[in-house]
Length: 232
Ligand SMILES: N[C@@H](CCC(=O)N[C@@H](CS)C(=O)NCC(=O)O)C(=O)O
Image (cartoon, rainbow, N blue to C red; front, side, top):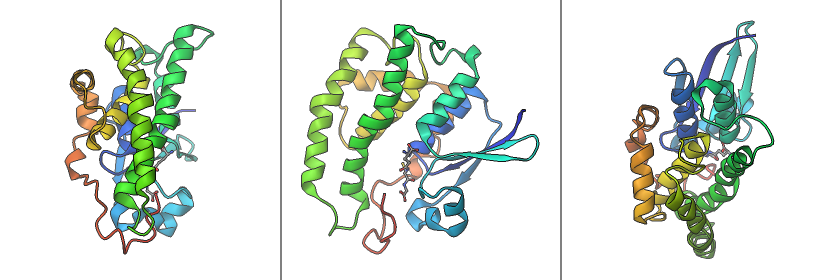
């Protein structure tokens, strides 16, 4: 059965930009983007919570040609689903017991879990949580872990090859590339090697389209002490 329509619920520069990037890399421009204002609490409206009980973006709504609707709620799963559905785009090594495939999946999920988790801790404690819930020790802990444990692993790779999993751009660069732009917003990943990596990936037309609204993003949540529901 064919997909009839794809609709992405999105907030500029956040994890939904990963999926927007993957959509432009794979299907092109034929998808709908529905902007959600996280800072006004749109993600907590009943209608949205019925679709996504995790109250976050991205949400990808997949309408099939028989009218049935399927929803995906995890950004890295969406990137993987898109990339794998278009093998002719060569954005991932073929499925099989190859070291290239193992390394690719390892880095997709390192980006989506371990690296993402540290950035998220910094984000919520620096900019999202009300001041009485924000913990400077958590910020210091994850900033330090990121600098001492994550950055060296990425630098080692980028010293040897142009992209995260070799000399070809792949889905892992969508996830980790997004994370590197995110990290730089927190003054992490400051070395030249990251700047050069971002120069390479940010020239891609799909990147430019996915991040065209990035300037609308402000890290600081306005009225965060009043918006008790934005829990992150
Ligand atoms: N694991 C999820 C996390 C999604 C997520 O937390 N998104 C943030 C923006 S980057 C969000 O929408 N937060 C709003 C909230 O939690 O209320 C993914 O990767 O898709």
